[in-house]
Amino acid sequence: MIDQILNYDTDLFLFLNNLGTPAWDNLWLIITHKLTFVPLYAILLFLLYRKYGLKSLLVFVVVVALMITFTDQITNIFKRGFQRPRPCGEADLIDQMRFIAVRCGKYGFFSGHSSNSMAAAVFAGLMLKSHYKNLIFILLLWSAIVAYSRIYVGVHYPLDIVCGLTFGAISGFIFYKLAKYLLNKFVSTII
Image 1 (cartoon, helix red, strand yellow):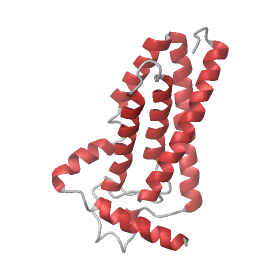
Image 2 (cartoon, rainbow, N blue to C red; image 1 turned 135 degrees about the vertical axis):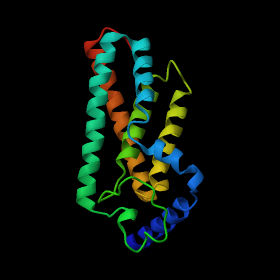
Image 3 (cartoon, one colour; image 1 turned 90 degrees about the horizontal axis):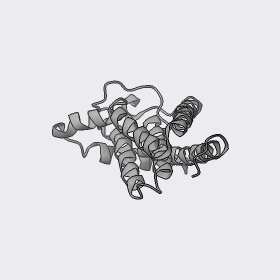
Image 4 (cartoon, rainbow, N blue to C red; image 1 turned 120 degrees about the vertical axis):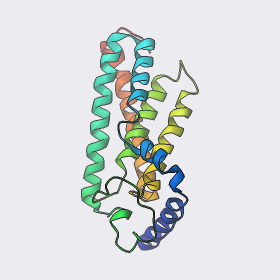
């Protein structure tokens, strides 16, 4: 059963990965780069500051730092625990796929890019929902694009992405609840 799921996952990876073309490679390499979205994070922090104030912003910075550290470390625990090689590390796949990433890495289950981007999207989207009701949908789309970029460049299977997105959504919601609790307890702003 597990082998069949992994075979389907590999087939879907090869299909999605081979949709890419050299004309789009640079765009997807930019999308998948970790520092590309620093301006987006800065804008989200500014929006949080504008809506909640400076004291709240300090709470948000601490909570977001904890959230990203948490998702990143849990991702690494899963990678070392499952030890599922990345598609770019599979000798029998390398001739069938497009590998354009800068490096491959050893293990891929589950995707840290997917979990981190989804956690940030859910957290910021929920915190700003009452002020910008459609922002969460834009952030979820952004997270899905970041996640797909990992398939496009050849470093993650679709199952790595789906599990990363799911874990990120759960983490983002948990840290959203934590931030609300801390704001209610320590900051005079009523949410």
